[in-house]
Image (tube, rainbow, N blue to C red; front, top):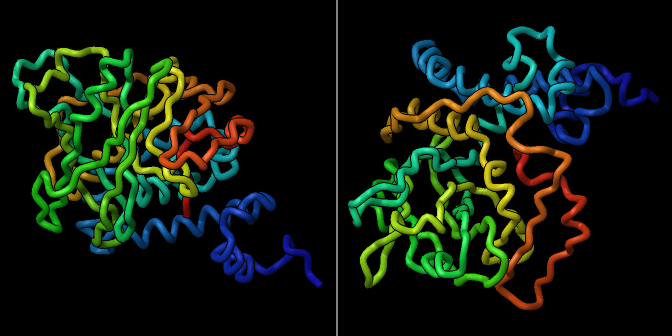
Length: 327
């Protein structure tokens, strides 16, 4: 009987289709075939019409390369296994590219201006992408300095619009549920986006964070409450949770700015929503957007009292700030 490492390429290819994440680390051959498998999967997502294909790569390729480079501190050694395959940061990273293009990219609030005198101006307006055919969580991140600022959360809602379904802002809002007294740092609350039908590539949506209350909006007058951005992960699918918090020292490590740039490039290519042109490109970093040796421990507040967090397990889980490779 042949050992798995001696199987013909055709059989290995079929096995990788069934168990890609489990088998990719068997040896170098498996790793390279796994990369080739995801090259084919990625190219299947992109329009085959030459003009549209070229247009896609003209818009998206630069942000893709920057995004892959930004993960070098996490996967540089693995990427170098395929360094002779072709174009660096593309042909050695198809698994990362596939998950990025068809994944749930974070959307950081890098356009924030806190000197607005327009009380009716949204706190945030931006466009991002979500996978087609999936019902995604939507999570809003806030930096909170004191309890008084936390009380404002009850007045904040997120409107969304998706052009292909002709939804207008206000037809759906995220759910904000109470607050927790304690040593405030970074906080996240969750709602659910409906399933977005679309083609293979991600679906563009527009998000607006606004204040709705009986009193005049005053977010821009309260620097103690700072909106950081959105993501679309389900951080604990087994238990219903209201929010979790982490130490405020991790504020700058939640969002990879190159991930936001990649998300916006996909929106730009889709052409359904405008993308702000005043984005400042992030400075190149040699250390990565977070330090893998320092764990950002989450402390969950659950909806039901019977749900309890295992903090010891939390301390040994993979770092949640790294990209989630789902497929």
